[in-house]
Amino acid sequence: MRHDKAPDRPVDVSHVKDAVPRVEPKSRGGNKSPYTVLGKRYYVMPSAQGYAETGTASWYGKKFHGHKTSNGEIYDMYKMSAAHKSLPIPTYLRVTNVANNKQVIVRVNDRGPFHGNRLIDLSYAAASKLDMLKKGTAQVRLEAIDPRAWQRSSNVVTVSTPAPEQNVTGRYLQVGAYSTRTSALQVESKLRNAFNQLAVITRNAVLSDGKTVYRVQLGPLQSTTSLSELINRVEQLGYSTPRLVDYP
Image (cartoon, rainbow, N blue to C red):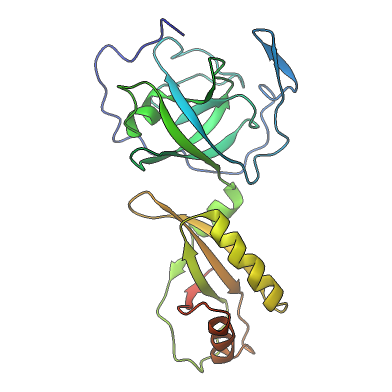
């Protein structure tokens, strides 16, 4: 690790897109549990569902570029990837630099870092986008992404609210949009207790500025659903700005 370094000349990675979450089976390589490195034993988590943690990120570059990662893929420092000691491979993570709120989405396909108390090793491209190359490390917040929820949320389109008495089909009533998953899940729990005829769903979506919102929705609405009555019940629970969204 002491001899690792960035490319000989600075590389513009602004065109490199975030990893796109997709449903994948666990890799054959890299998921053995437990495994031992430098005399220390590590255990791989059975699932990344709900994973969130804050800690120190580092990055790795030219020394490992072109070599195999733990799951047998070839490490490309210009792609949005990462190494983690215990998350299943692959796992998709949203990584936020807590110092500047810059975010990236990476795909974990490697093991590490095995140095000090570092939580994650990011590719050169990911570290560059988080503006942490110069310092070498950064405090980051990690949040696992559910690829199925991601794919569903990418198709959500906001629409104008129709007349209150209109009954609708194939739509959801969005109760609110929240900046943290914890807040959204609290609202989801409250709605589940109040509504047993409709599903309550939380969808995550990335905004144009890179921030993530968690949208809590009721539905799908049926032709027999009285929209005005539903809105009144939601407002009585303390949610004052429900709106309709289309969802295929």
